Length: 61
Image (cartoon, rainbow, N blue to C red; front, top):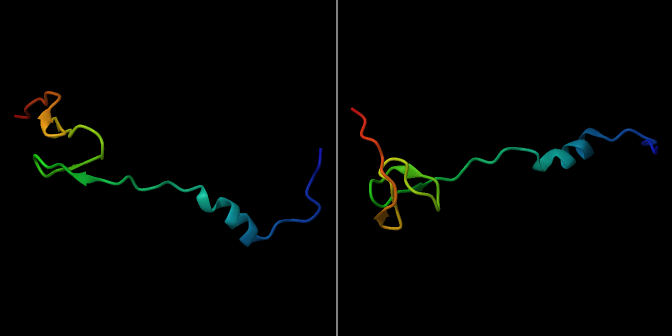
């Protein structure tokens, strides 16, 4: 099996790892209830998507 002849520097190692981080998920505002929601998904607070109710949300008492 081939092995590296010389050790890689810290900058070279860090350049390789530059894409290995988690991205913050973007949030958009629900046009119905103005809560934060993920884009292209039904709102978990009111159940609306594209201007109509698509799911029932249980009422919290």
